[in-house]
Length: 188
Image (cartoon, one colour):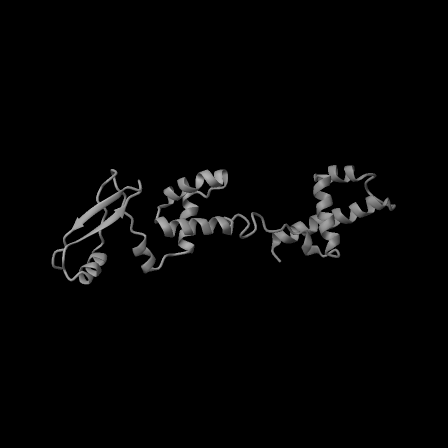
């Protein structure tokens, strides 16, 4: 047992014993009331009751008087699982960075929206595998009607299917307008 712990126990055991004698009004006792006992030892009645309750519940074990570990309990401040799942789902779907994720969830969670740093911690808890990273590549158009991007892997597959002839295909952009894109594939 550490010296600080011994000091706490040596201080509180006599106070608690005197508190029991004062409450039971057993004679001889040094104090007429609990208030006078508290004033003499410079403790509040609330603190004295709390220590006494803990001491009695542990069957007067001196170690129960020692202060409990301070601070929040592990996991008590963690983001709820439901919010974490939504963040991971959005991250895997859009590939957004942490600031975009905060802006995305702010209207839904209001003051419970995790900070950008928390978003990064959540993303690191559920990492993407390499195949998911390839899917996330996104291309944003600057103006409506801009041509869509054709990935090289897709072009090779289509090129082999069509026997090397030029082909036409349609894309739908975010404004739901149909764009005809003519693409003549060069030999690869």
